[in-house]
Length: 467
Ligand SMILES: C[S@@+](CC[C@H](N)C(=O)[O-])C[C@H]1O[C@@H](n2cnc3c(N)ncnc32)[C@H](O)[C@@H]1O
Image 1 (spheres, helix red, strand yellow):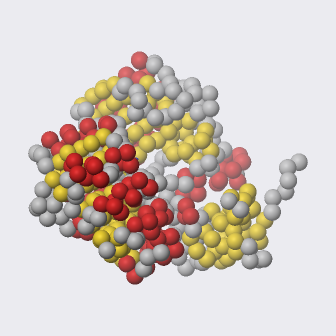
Image 2 (cartoon, helix red, strand yellow):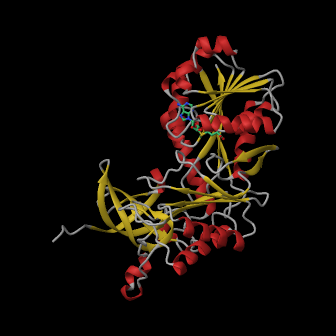
């Protein structure tokens, strides 16, 4: 018999912490991080393993409801894990995001929290994503509701999202609020077609089965790309499915498929088969047109990306004689927008394919005052690089979650460049870097732009000025 797990009879949840977990205290005053609660709730919870020495609890019952609690809009909320904060009113989501930024600036950066400005809310709370990736699995996640009612458990395959913490289980989704239609109709059509025709769903442990992944990309100008990944090369079954998709969804403007028999779902290293329509879709961000292929990275919430980049560019206040560096430039979204105002922009990015896209997009928009370099920023940014390429007036950085490499911080500190605009998707590492720069740069402004409502993801833009 397994060890009986402890029940916390009463935990008062007081705050939101890392990864959207609630911080609470049990009857003895010990801190417990609870999954699924809302600050202000009093809950009963099942104790789970400690993480980094902190007790973890799984919510069992809400004993007293927080005034910030609201009804989730999605019927898959309890199982999916994609939009973890749907039970928290939107104004409270923003308040908690801002609190996390305030704490990071005060405690990690050691800077004045007065510099933190009110967050910019999202324009749209639903249907804001332009890309979703669904997974097929021959093992459906048994939902919490089904588990309670043992007689009505539906077995069989699923097409949806991975259940958090269970790599081989997929939550079957028939309604998602993240991407506008026909995204829902296409996903449900593919699943029904597969079941009707007896096509096999992928087994994520044994790596066999035909249907593996479905990616749907929607453009704001009614363009639509679909990419299907198959785990086996059954040409007849694949062609019949793709033809049926085109027939039933005239909205599809671009259709690809790929055979992926590898141990992982990544298709970036695999040749794609172009089956129908255009090779790409196009999307506009602030008057710059971007050509997006099936493997291209692109901002997933284009509406809020415009708001984020507008804010970054207003912080940068670029003049027509400015030389601007865009470090970690990706496909050059910021570089190309900045180039419209600047004398010249130089973008540096690690991924060659992203730079190829950036160069294509520069040509497409007749922008010729940009230069892109493929490299790790930390390997080339130093005094001799500044001497060779010119010392910039403004440096814009948009690093991955890990933040800036220490060599990059050092190079910026030594450069004495007038202004640094720091776009970030991780307030902790951004605050760490701002702290490492504070002897040379003062934090003038920092503001959150809410890109992903109902999640704990935070995007911020900070303006630093030379002291
Ligand atoms: C947050 S994204 C920036 C996206 C970009 N602003 C855009 O809109 O396309 C971070 C980028 O940094 C790149 N990257 C990660 N590590 C890097 C490094 N050491 N040097 C240069 N680029 C890096 C990633 O490939 C990614 O494109």
